[in-house]
Image (cartoon, rainbow, N blue to C red; front, side, top):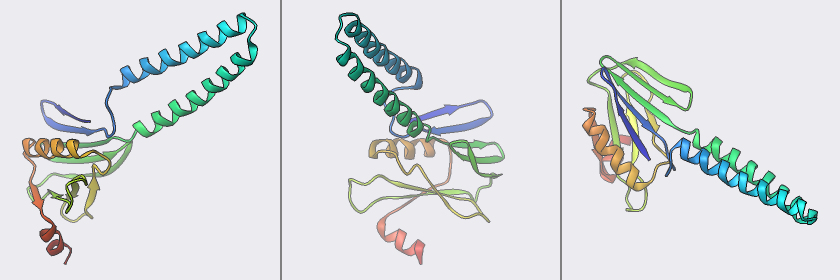
Amino acid sequence: MVNLLIEQSARHLRITPNRSVDDSMLQAHNLWLTAIVLVMSFLFLLTGLWPISVMLFLVLLGLLYILLHVAEILKREERLIIDINQLEYRRGSELLISTAFCDASCIYVSFPSSGLDPLKFELVVPERPSLSFAQSISNNDSVILLKTLKKCGLNVIELSSKDQLVKSL
């Protein structure tokens, strides 16, 4: 899922991979699922079927472990902020690039040889090492991201397999 937030003085692009629902819906789903397991466990305990209640409690512990692990995975988001004269790139809470924005800054988009692989994005800023981003998004989201980057007015250079070979030389 690619979210584009446009502010008055800046273009702010937030990339959140592997998401089909937003944070509030995910929390509501997790709370609903946990509440059902707790209520069922309590009802089995009241009817004297404590072994089933114990098993449901163990299932609840496993479910909570999975939900916490999923929450950790979902924290992988990337932010590309292009202000009038500033370029900033963050992965999670880590600031990777913060530099003056210039016309020489560009994004290389590599098209894969097979149609099943997603596009590869590489941010190139003068006097800095190039940086790959949006590596874990789907094919559909990578196409949406490409269109969004062009709408933001960034210098987007599309490379075919042949161009990648020339660039690497």
